[in-house]
Length: 76
Length: 150
Image (cartoon, rainbow over all chains, first blue to last red; front, side, top):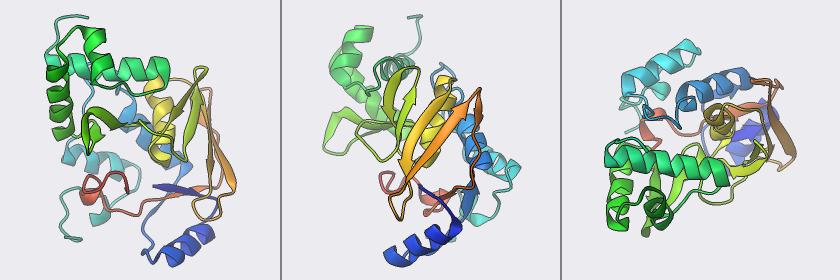
């Protein structure tokens, strides 16, 4: 998961690495992902979100579809 | 430390030492901190890996490569927080360190294509917004297939 100045830089990077362009996430979404994922990471209760919880977290940020579904078999 | 199960003790020790030092501890350091035999700590590392909470070094189960959001090695995502220096595994984890430590942070990162310096910042508990974007190259179903690449 890399950071880019702009979408144009993403396209250039994908072309140079022969990697298909996949979803982009803005900094507001990225911060919310970080808070949801890691906010309690140093606590007793911390754990990785279960697959359905992951889908829920992504969906709340507008990140939907098979790419964001940890149970998707679209790329298998 | 309260009477938590072994795995929880190990997990808490990993993250406490990392937060305090900026470096992910090996099994020896965790063993000393919680006074548990090192072989049991290594076994707990394996179980935490199964739960996708840490990633041990492939060729050395006594060392941890990733205790997300923290990295056990230097990366392109250094993070300054609480007066300490950390390394994040990726751009998501750069913000993740600020979220995990509940503090402001600065990550002097760089553009994935050009290498141009790009700074990520959390101030007063909120991200300083810029028009940067993060690219997720790997679908969620495959993040742990090769976490180092992801």
